[in-house]
Each structure stands twice: as C-alpha cells, then as structure tokens.
Image 1 (cartoon, rainbow over the protein chains, first blue to last red):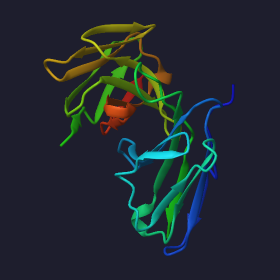
Image 2 (spheres, helix red, strand yellow; image 1 turned 90 degrees about the vertical axis):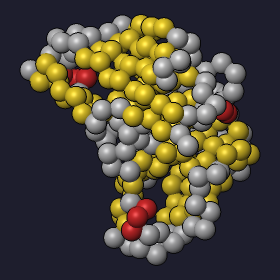
Image 3 (cartoon, rainbow over the protein chains, first blue to last red; image 1 turned 120 degrees about the horizontal axis):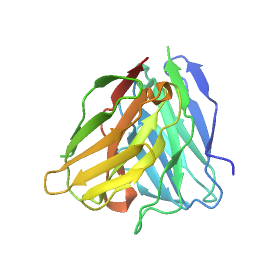
Image 4 (cartoon, rainbow over the protein chains, first blue to last red; image 1 turned 180 degrees about the horizontal axis):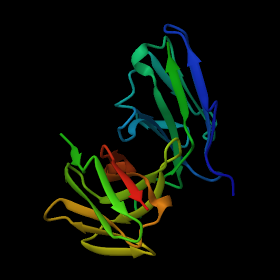
Length: 116
Length: 109
C-alpha cells in the first residue's frame, strides 16, 4: 500500500514569490492534515480536512496561506507571497477518520522549503 | 493554553533502557501519542494511550497517568537505529494532535 505522497521534496524560492505543495493521502483516508515543522520543533497543525471540508483552519495564516482539497482526495497548500520566516518543512498526514476510536495519522516525507 | 514538556536530548548506550518523559497541560485531552522521526524523515507512529497504564509493543512501551498529566516512552534493548527524535503528542478534540518539541535520542556503541 502506498503511503502519503508529497511533492516537491525540496523547494528553494526567493521571498515574495508564490509556492505550492501537493499531497496525495493514503487511499480511503478521509481526513487530511497539513503541518508545519520548524527545525528542532514538533509539527504544528495548519489545517485539517474531513473529505473536502476544512474543519479546523484556526492555525492557518490566512493572509498568505491557502489550501484546498477539491474532490476530497489530494490537496494543495499555497503560500503567496512567501516570507523568510516560512522556511520550514511542510508535512502532510492522513487518517481514516478523526473522531471516535483513535485513528493513527500517517505522515508523508514533507516538503522542505527554503526562502531566500 | 496547551503545552507539553519533554527533555530536549537523551544519550544512552546500545543494549540499554531509556525512558523519555512527557508532561502536558491541555484542555480536551483524549490521549497521548508517541512518534519517532529520523533526520529528514517522516514522523512515524509508535504508540497511543487513551487510558492509564502501560502499553507494550515489542521493545517499546508507553505509559500514561491522566491524573498526573504525565506519560513516558520506554525503549528497551536500544539499537543504533533507535537514534532519532521522539515526540509526545496530545490528542485533542477532532483528532487534533499537539506535539511536544521532541527529544533527540543518541544511541552510542
């Protein structure tokens, strides 16, 4: 079974440029998460989707960040314009669901973003 | 607010036993998870405790005391490949995970 797929793995851009990250979750997983991980820190949730609905985006900086999961499968996270402080690893994770019995979150390898 | 505390780094030798502690302050607590992350890799799930007590999975065990807002991950028969960062994470409402800052484990020969 394929795991969570993310692309690109690495991205280097200059500040003020736009950037987009793509994630394809594990087949059948209804819940999709985007996390940000700074060096030496734990992942921090940016947004959670249940199918195509964003049910928790309270931590997403909406002035420059946007995300979509149009058909409830793959998802795109965008930053426009990027700032120096956005340099981090952007992780995507998926799970079967998010309520009731614990559903393990499976993480992708992440996209390492460097903003120059 | 919500916060988790765990040691920033731990060093141990091959074959030894190491315990990584985690204390938390959070609302809406549903359980405590542990994840392992190798350098440059994806976090991978190790264990989950919803109730008090010890959960054992092979060489790894995890413990939770809800009354003390405390848990730990116990790694036995340490191997070099266990060198990684270990994160505790509180599971909140809607499956949301709030991660600690991680403990970097170095296993020496």
